[in-house]
Length: 625
Image (cartoon, rainbow, N blue to C red; front, top):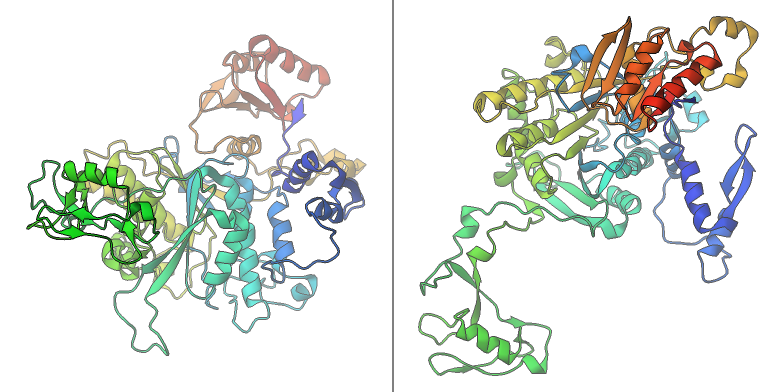
């Protein structure tokens, strides 16, 4: 039987295979860092294959920085880490489809690559703005060995992440470190988006230009949708040295621009008020629009006689927007307005009934429409008895606008891998409450410790994750209290997972290094502190099954049988499994089945398992760990 691999995909290997399918002559063999021969790419050959001229130089238009290649390599490098379920911190574990994941989002994005590949409709992130005071994602790949040994402050004396470390503007790699952090994460995030998916990224002036350069490279310049200017402050700061900054940006990229359709915004009373009906047109209120265009055509330059008898022509350099015959049809149909006395230049009627489907969003978002930072802070304070706990949390109205523009269906996945105060989760629950949807959120947050002098720490919250989870609980309760009848089926729960080292002992990945002494200790290749739940969800992730799916457990002949989503995966991790249990599992016709390798001490036992599934469920894929 095949073994579970418990390692994220080797994206470098997959990319080499794809390139090799297109350009076989560019694929060669080379030794890796361990001296093993593997397939690789001859980049000089590939460059020549992609050039119509002789390649003799390395000049090209590009955006680069110190550490870029390392960031690209890190995004492609697999990980053996896993997600361990934390049921005691979760809410409605058995019924919820929402996820809250604690850990470094770089690792999380890698771990989610198989289970959520191409399934996320919308991503919103509010990453560290790199102001020199809030950069807490010290990836190892952004430094070389000398910087490590020199004591950069990324890690403390025990080798743990130093969350207090600042990315000072005086640091030699101030912008480079930030770009490396974003590049690897956006590369992995893009893989998770559906073809019609979209990502929104909040940022300020410090890294706006760099972020757009990174975004253009990762998503493709053609997939750039636009940049929103959000008025985040409602009053100026008079102590500002130069300008009082009152805005942030939101960069927007589509996974594939031709597949994405932008969501329209509800029409406002102010917008509808522009439509009148002074001539009692039976088609309803309308507004007048220009009939001329700048792109001149002699065929569209002709005189029009108004109802009063006055003859009018387009102004110099312009012409009518259509030909004479079509214009006469519009006039005869009452769709052209010449003014109350019939002497004005003609204008086209645009009817309110034709635009009721919604308004195209604009790039300037005023705080009156989508809220400001203080509103976001007040929302948190309201939930936590007057305590803010977060600096500048995004207001729910802002996230609601983003969710509308993303054009979500009612079952979409929404991901936020810098979730912070969990405003995104709050907004998703609120949207579901408003329209009866079942959108699912995936929140990811590094467990940054709370300052021991902070009000949050004094209130018992040890890290940001604890506050974020509590915010979701309280927000969900508040939404249900405000509409108890309409939110009976609203999902306000979430399953908590934490990033941890692999469930498997090291020998699982390096069996060739097993010696006589370690063999004695290897009764099982699974770490002693791991539970059935740890193993089950690791198998789901390794097999590419969503970890938000429903899960049930039943007892049979002294064994526990786990069933995910009614047969998407069935598992039994007991050390000894009688034939009756295996037969019962096979009779349920699952898509996938998994067992401990140590449950079958002899080869004939594995053969019996294989034969049992062939007899009762021949399409089931069976593996061991």
